[in-house]
Length: 289
Image (cartoon, rainbow, N blue to C red; front, side):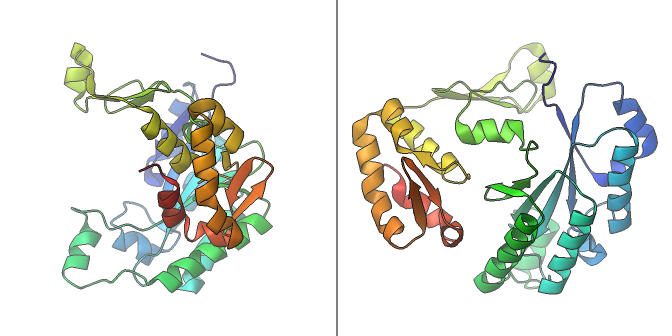
């Protein structure tokens, strides 16, 4: 293992008590990602989380007391009955804790969850698009003003604290997944391990193997790179997939460049602030059919 390898533990705030963190000190974890989601107790109860806001704040302090300073906080917006004031307060509390990394995701209603059942019964309603955009604008404004790099649509970090694993994924760097349900990528194929720990330990480890053809690899490149602050690189596209792909990509980018939803800096093409709000549609239009 590399001496400076980044080893992240994902944890719920209510698990991060002092005695548990004391045990973690003897293990090689050097980064902790906390699934806080909200600092508002009403939100947390509605999300069926096990912790409350006070426990989340205490968890951050406990981590630091035990030497874990490389922390990431997960937040969620677009929640039922969430107001602009509540969202701003969430962000202010998060920033007061000075985490080097913050991830923020819009709520999606996953089948089988309590919120999904409430949605089906008409007890809650999804926030409309105007509110979603305003929540994201507030997120982007506050975090960038606080000195965070907006390096991927949902991720913000202080300089030097970008998530190494996620950055590798977005940049197409090969990675190896070890353990049940883990995923691997070697540049030309994807592998998903079995979810059963019993089967995995018996050696029956691969659940799915997918060999990626050229078009799929190109589409994956567009989907992952355009989400980031690095954007897509026309020279890299030509090197990886040939000049026909780079020409094709640039042609499809022109309408969005003209509308200032994309910006070009030499061979790099990135989403603009306006373009981020339409990123799904832009990415879809750049794919090879």
